Amino acid sequence: MLRMSRRVAGFGTTVFVEINNLARECDAVNLGQGAPDFDGPPEVLQAAVQAVNRALNQYAPGIGMPAVREAIAQHAARFYGQKLDPETDVLVTSGATEGVFAAILGLTDPGDEVIVFEPVYDTYVPNMVMAGVMPRYVPLRGAHWTFDPEELAKAFNRRTRAIIVNTPHNPTGKVYSRQELAVIAELCRKHDALAITDEVYEHILYDDAIHTRLATLPGMAERTLTISSLGKTFSVTGWKVGWALGPASLVNAVNQAHQFITYAVASPLQAAAATALNLPSSFFENLQVNYQARRDRMVKILEHVGFQVFKPSGSYFVMIDWRGVAPAKVQDDFQFARWLTSEIGVACIPASPFYQESDKHLGKHCARFAVCKKHETLDAAAERLSRLAKR
Ligand SMILES: Cc1ncc(COP(=O)(O)O)c(C=O)c1O
Image (cartoon, rainbow, N blue to C red; front, side, top):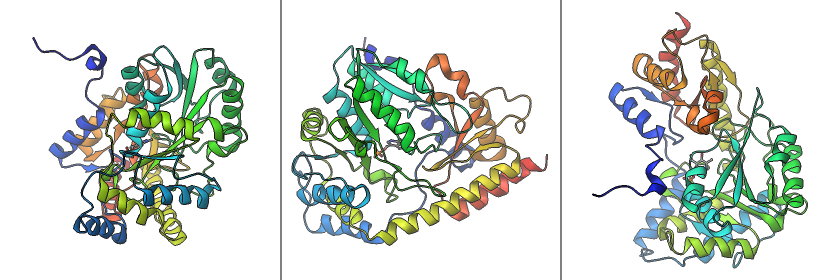
């Protein structure tokens, strides 16, 4: 009889599939998945079209097109003062998702431990399971999603190979402060561990938040692999063009895995990535202004309804505590998300899937709303949610 491998049998279906299906069935305004409902910059879209028409349609080099690696290195120099050799320190991957998986496969051995902060973005732990690596969880707690340095220190041990740091953070919108990153850096140095960072929301920042790259802290350049991608910054999440940056030895290890996962990334979309990354500063400034307006709007709507809102400093998301707003029949985050989608007509994502089994209670009262939507979409959500305020 055909059956699934034990490796994947426990994965189930992601919550995004369930909520997207329900949102479609109920004709709900979908603030679930973190995908913009508007297009990226026209010059970037045009660059992809031109690349197709210029016959850039065959395999790119496995590590990425030279012009794209150059643009990625320049972007890192422009925004973070990093000095990277595009020949050896940059690898183009199929989105950040593949970058993280290839990093785990290329940099860890079965039986190693990798530390993650909880709530945790949903691909990391299944990636570890497939690689035979053990996750170690350190919870983020309280209104500002902070971690206890003692608890983090205890998570490190002789098996620790790496820590994954996602900043700005999905699902909470936390932007790790320089002080927090310094604590992480010190522990990495002390235990000779690697850091793998996921910085896909690096340009989606609110108020005066500053995105600090862990790789730029003292002693961290040689032990950090920085991963990011095009999707969130340039509103092209369907393109799946990402990259991994770091010292040649780490990038080479990641490429050992990457060459046998995807081999190379879609050529025309890579070509357009160079156009995107070279856009002038005004693009990045406008992006922040536009996102700030969306976030402010969404926070206002959610607060008006009566939710406890965790104001994000970055990312596409706003987390809320739904207690006190939902009716008594709603007992957990899944029931809340299903109820809000089917009865109020606004879809959101329950928070417990971002926690391991024994910590699910920590996410039970929370749900995540995406703000990466047109103002019309947010208007429609506001109109429906305002019915809740009137109850
Ligand atoms: C934290 C985080 N990392 C990675 C990704 C996926 O990035 P990509 O589309 O580049 O694979 C997402 C998308 O939601 C994300 O939120």
